[in-house]
Amino acid sequence: MKTLVIFHALCILLILGYCDVTQAQINEDTVDHYATAKASENKGIDFDENTLFSPFTKQEWRSYQEKKINEGRKTLLNFTITYKNKTAVKDANLYMKQLTSDFHWGCGMTHRILNNTAYKKWFASKFTAADFHNELKWYYTEPKQGEENYTDPDAMIKFADEHGIIVRGHTILWDDVKYQQKWVRKLSPDKLLEAANKRVDSVVKRYKGRLIGWDVMNENLHHNFFEKRLGKNSSAYFYNRVYNIDPSTTLYMNEFNTTEQVDDKWASPEKYLRKLKAIQAYPGNSGMKMGIGLECHYGAEPIDLHYVRNSLLSLSQTGLPIWLTELDVKMDPTLPNKTQLQVIYLEEILRESFSHAAVKAIVIWTGSSIDGCDVMCMTNEKLENTPVGDLIDKLMVEWRTGSIKVVSDSNGSSQVSVFNGQYEVTVVDPVTNASTSVSFKVDKVSIPDKVIHLQIPG
Image (cartoon, rainbow, N blue to C red; front, top):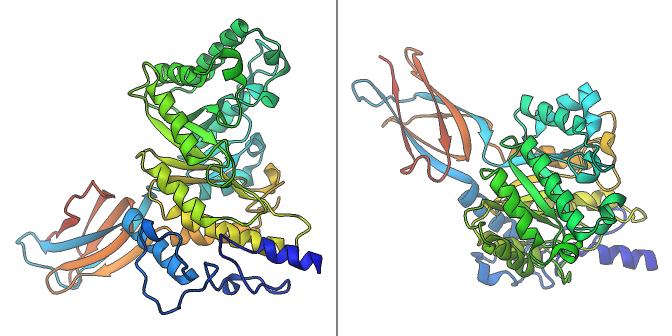
């Protein structure tokens, strides 16, 4: 009985719950409401940020997510198709193919990928972004003072470059004392500053212009190794040093529990923003490009989606890009049906996160169990999908336009809503099969009037 009670407690999502769940049956259909008091299935509700704590059904919550996705991630295009003489082309076939997406699916990567051809092919076929687990960290590249080794990150970045995968630099420095090399811990403040400056200069100059961003001082809300030894402005100082070396690259604060834990006193959205503003206010940092890095290591406890939503809303007010940098969901290994619950929790986090347009990328932690799978993986060592992998594959398809066909009406017009990204469009005359092709960027600013004029030869 005790096990069953604990199990049902863990199945509560939000304030709200995954209710009436038995140990024998856990699937999407069992999630029958999204609040302690169930709202009417027929109740028409128009969500806004002032009604976040009202009782809504799952259907209503999901409808709001879809509304925000349509508003923030998609663009409604109007095509007009004519001949050279301006005559409208009726029944013209218009084929659209999405080449790239404005949203990045990313994955954690380790040096194990370097000698595994199948894993390379799998990774490159799915992801457009990567975070290295350890290979760019100071303790990896300089385990002994003065003996730097960039062999692995050099090869990993080369692989990424060859396959159009953007890489985040994770991380230049880490504020947690337990991740400092023994020789670093022994340094006096003056020698520590000298060594840290050398580290910054070495790694940033080496990869200048090749990375999409840098985690400059990792987890500097929960930890303060450098602040205690070098002063309270040491984070801001190192951001400034990186900025002066590589001014075009986005610099991130990367932190855990800003969306995961409502009761974490160190990393609330308010404290995150306070620290970020302090870094921006440091002399010389006013023009620095900054971004928000959220690790998103969700634990086995129920996930409060209301808190996730409010946190993302608060952070998005900065106008800065948000990356979910290390997303996973940890489950109690003794919990019955833990795999099904992990997929359910993960889907809710992914859908809620994707509904915020400020979230530019989600990095899954980790891809294959080849890289180790202590929390969550998409595949086993044979690169066969886990249930988590099946879910992510499904959402990758759902959140991409792919290839579509539309037909013009009698006025030569057609309309289609597509996910933002780069497209190739071919229009074909229904009578002569004459065609023309164009490529263009679709987003909220590239096509101001949302109208595209295409002309068929003839």
